[in-house]
Image 1 (tube, rainbow over the protein chains, first blue to last red):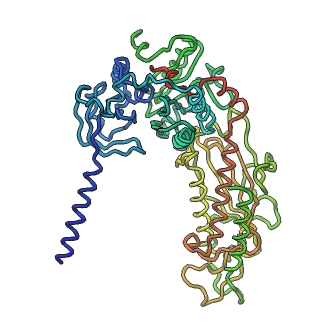
Image 2 (image 1 turned 180 degrees about the vertical axis):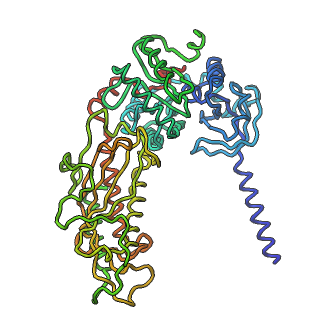
Image 3 (image 1 turned 45 degrees about the horizontal axis):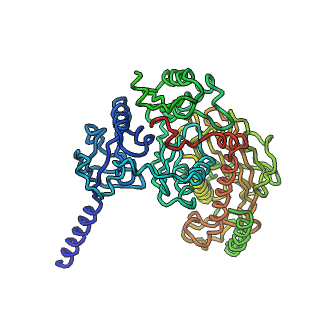
Length: 291
Length: 260
């Protein structure tokens, strides 16, 4: 009997120990889903503005782990909502492969509170993202991603390369695209680390109807951007939100795309992030300034 | 899976299964009384089961031996247009002179269940599996074609969940098609006649759990793998696609993304 009791105490202690080990503490930037996946690199004032404005418009709050730019969705969004655009110290159970964290505690911090040599300072230092990039390696990464066969009009995959380190990001409707992209890039000679921030989108029936209707509408009015089995306009749909990405020739086309998608049943927000060819790099922040 | 490896598996499977054939010496002593639900019939010697919505488009597949296939090339309605899939329960076609009551229902159910799991596992990372039809959703219909029954197991010799009569799967082939889940229009189809050969049988309803029936599971896994191979080839980028993506900077590197 005593042996059994001792065993139970031991098991209990081991499980508490395991539970305790699962809790990680790390510094993060509290971002909006859209900016976290599109504004890769250091936390600048533009990025803070982007985070706050897109969050106000309905983009989901997420955490960006400072040490390696991993985007993490959280189980209790209300804990991080007040902190969007700020740095935070986070405690929680991390599941890196799923890109999730089960929050235990979050508190706002200042950049000064992160020690000088802490890996968490990486995203705070613009110089970290000013290293020369290898054009050859960059093209290899681009080519591998471009040749993936299961990319559809509803997937947007992007990457940033900082020396031998690659961050993959974007949204996809297929799990295989996330895994394949990570594997392909990891296998390229010269690539050392890959952070995979590609999010797998839900396939709810309303989102599926929005996808089909959006493609139909855009093909009808902007058919020149659709070719073969692909398109220059990418339609990312996530729980009723539509994010338009890619490239068009004129501002008028961009506006047409926005209007067409905004009028679709089931859509409650369209983020028009289409880039107009030939214009300066046009960001969401600039678009907001124009009102 | 290569043609050769599948073929060698197949030969090994045939030998292995043939060796495990239930020895039967007496006439039917315990025929199943219930006709297997959903079991269909095709006349012996017939090329097709009549399962596909149309066979008119099928042509020999250069990539898959003993297979005829069709893939819609129209960009407006080819497989690239779809992002998810419903996997229907397979239909089983018997090709035998034996009456329905002689075909063990438990064996047919085990076949269907195993094959559905195998094809689901083969495709679900490329086409997420969902339950309801709708836009952008394909329906995968499949049929196991040509099962027969062996001689009945003598009374008193059955044990465990051994079938009353073994199912002969030596001449079994597979027919499958992808249809639009809303309109039913055929988007792709394949008739795979790569079979195990004479002597391949299933004698137990739980054949997936018994090592001696590994050959049969390998055969079904092989067909599932060929389905995935077929889907991958149907999903390859066209020359136009390759030309276009090479001319653009897709996928956009971070400096090309709009929010910057």
